[in-house]
Image (tube, rainbow, N blue to C red; front, side, top):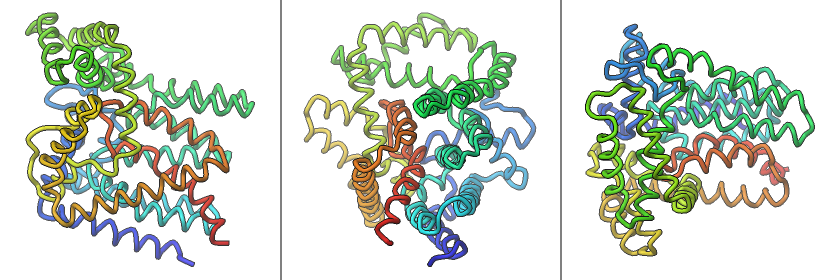
Length: 417
C-alpha cells in the first residue's frame, strides 16, 4: 500500500512538472489569468502596510483572505511564485488532514485523484483563489460528515472571504440539515456564515460608503451577464450591447462620480436591461454555466502558460453566440484559428489528458449517482455551477472538484476489495 510520504513525494514531482514551463518567466503567472494581477497587487500593498488597496483605492471587489495569506510570503520577497509554493504546501496539509479521517483505501484513491488531477495541478500554479476555495469547501464537508460542526462552520464562514460566490451556499447547507431534521444545525449553518461577513461589510462601508461585502457580482452582472442577454435579444452581439450599456452609464453618472454613484448606476442599468430580456438571460446563463462542468481546460491561460504570448481578444462569448445561433461550424473555425492551432505538442497532450480525466470523473460520478444520491454534494455543486453564467470556465470546477474526488474514492474502493 502507498504510504502518506510516498503520496507527498508523488505530489511534489507532479506539481514540479507542471511548474517547469513557468521557470524564468514569472510574467506568465500574472498574465495568464486576469484575477492574478489584482491579487498580487493587493498582497504587495498589504506587505508594505499600505492597506487593502489596488490602484490607490480600497478594493471592494476581491475578498481579503487569499491576498492576506499571499502577503505573508511577500514579507520575505514579493514574487507571484509564492502562490505556487503556498498551494503546494496547502495540498500537503490537505492530504495529511484527509488521512486522519478517511479509511486507508478511500484515502489512497482520493489522494491519487487529487495528485493526478490536471485541473488542480494547473490552476494551483497561479495566484488565484479557486484552489483555496476548493480546499476550504472540502474541509467544510469533511468535518460536517465527521460531525465536527464547529470546524465545519468555521471553514464555511471563511469561504466568502475567499470568493463571494460562497454567499450562495449557507441556504443549501441549511436545507440539507432541514431534510435531515436537524433544526438547530439548520439555523446555525444559515445564520453564522452571514453574521461572519458583517465586519467586512462595515469596513467597506466605512472606507467607501458602500454597505456591501463585494462588488464583484455587480460587475459581472453589468459587464457580462446582462450585455450577453441584451445582445441575443436585440441581435446586435455581446460587444455592441456592452458598448451601448457603457455609453448609457456615462450619460447617467457623468465624468465626476463617487464609487457609490458608479455602482448605483450599473445596478440601475443592469436591472433595467434585465427586465427586457429575462428569458434570454435565463437561457444564456444556464447554457454557459454548463461550460464549468464540461470544459476540460481554459484555453487562454493554457496558451499563455505554454507560450508566454498575450492573446489578442477573448473569444468565449463570440464562439458561444454562434453555437446558440446553430452556426456550429463558424464557432469551431474561430476556436481553431484563435486557440487550438497554437497549442503545440505539449498543449495537445495536456488538453487530451484533461479531456480523458474529465470523462473518467464525470462517467464515474454519474454511474454512482444511480446507486447513491449524494444529497449534500449535489446541493453544493448546483449553485456553484449555475452561478457562473457567461463567465464560466473550467477553473471554476476546482471549487467543488475535491468533493467529487472524495465521493468517487468512497465508491471506487469497493472495486479493490
